[in-house]
Length: 172
Image 1: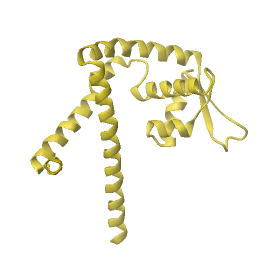
Image 2 (image 1 turned 30 degrees about the vertical axis):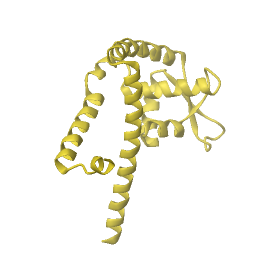
Image 3 (image 1 turned 90 degrees about the vertical axis):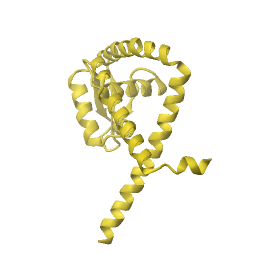
Image 4 (image 1 turned 60 degrees about the vertical axis):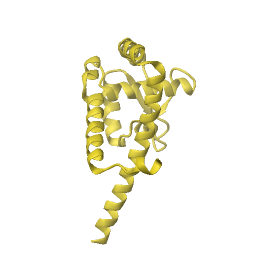
């Protein structure tokens, strides 16, 4: 049975990969963006991560280091710095460093940042509350667990293919 599951023919691989790509596209580019007016999705995720990190580290005013945020968002330091700079310029974050900054820079969410985050969360709770009610909480939890598992496998395969690509270039 397990061998049958692994033996996916090329037509199935094509059909399933197209469907998966399409579903991820819809999730990332679909109507959900309609609910983000004052924050982009990455900005919301960054503010939420900073807020949650602050709560875990001792409440409001706690620091989130730029490097940690970049890792969480799967962005480069340069990309993260650009976004953080924009959030800072809008008064949603304070961006600072200890000493001369050689130990890294950190951000702290401001009161304006907390207010905007709370507004965005209220919109998402209203939308997702209805979705979860219709789809079922247990189904959502199962789907998220499976998505995390799939993301891990996809990342491993990507790294493996990139490594093979690098080896091919070195052998030429």
